Each structure stands twice: as C-alpha cells, then as structure tokens.
Image (tube, rainbow, N blue to C red; front, side, top):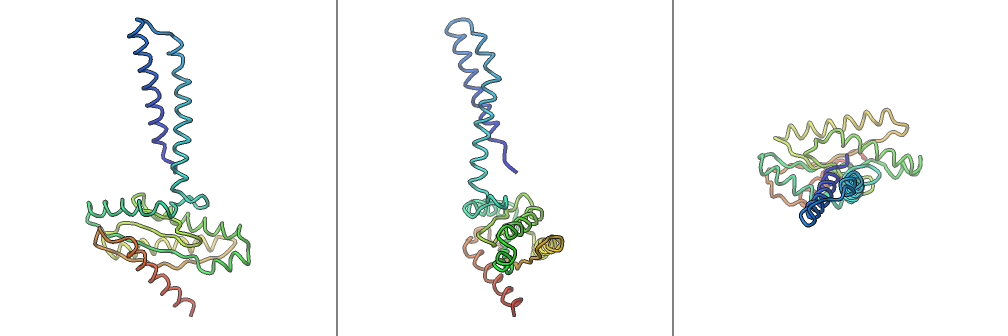
Length: 214
C-alpha cells in the first residue's frame, strides 16, 4: 500500500507558502486581494498532485513492479530498521530465503506470463503472512527474502510453516502447480551482519533443495 504522507506534507507546505504570501500582502498594503483567498482550492489541488507524484516516485523506487514487494535495493535499509526494533524489544532476527522450485521448467512449459502469475501468488502469500513490522522482498528472479522478529525458535517455525501452508493452498487452486523451498536462520544478536545471515539462510535453502531433488 502506497504511503500518503508526502501528499499531506506537500499540501501543508504549499498552503503555508500561500498563507505567508497573504499575510505579507496584508502587512505591506493593509489589505489583501480576494483573488489570493480564491486561490486556496487551486493551490491545494496542485499540492495534492505534486505530493502524489512524490509518493509514487518513492513507492516505485523501493518496490518490485511485478509483485508489489520491496525490491532488492530497499532490503538493507529494511534490515537496519529491523535491527533497531530487535534491539529495542529484545526479540530475535529472522531471515528467510524462499525459492520457487523448478521455476525455469514452469516458464518453459507454460510461458513467462504464467511464470509471472506464480511469482505474484507467492508474493501474495508473503504479504499476507508477514506482519507490517517485517519485510517481504523479491531478491531476484524467483527468489524472495523475508525479514521478521520472533520471540523464539518456535515462533519462527510457526511463521515459516504458515507461509508454506498458504503457498501450498494457493498452488492447489492455481492453473499451474508450484512449490517453494525455504531456508531460514535466527540471530539473538541485533547487530548481526546482514550478509552473514543471508548466507546462512541461503545455505540451508540449498541443503533443503538438494534433499528434495534426490
């Protein structure tokens, strides 16, 4: 969902400038032109449009167009925010990597359009299953990452199991069946290095994928 705060900032700023001009005009000449007052609705509309373009620019700078998830470029900043929250709450950092199994075969057999639909379905499951404090991002191609906070390992397992269950349900209802593999890791250290946690989750992912392929 697109943040609307910049629209309000733009409106407030433009109305403040308009009001400052009105007060200056009145202070200098002892009266004001009614046209200035009549211009308030027009200024508000212009400010709203400017703010809307600003909101869109920021949204698409950090979002993946196909899935609506955060994009790879925005993940480091989201991770730093999770670190701060983990430090404040004493919770553990959860990092998960999700990979769509046999995605190339799906594209080859059903076409890239169906492949995109599969990625979108996985993204919907992530958006539904990850709380607002967390992050679901498209890392690249058919790979996704999740960042969240958990009180303990049991809670983390519940989060992952819920995601996988939702994805299985979506696959059963889809035209093209699909599945995912998930690798994840936990850290009690709020200062843990992002690349290290990602590497650990990635290693578990490929261990799981190698087991399922044999």
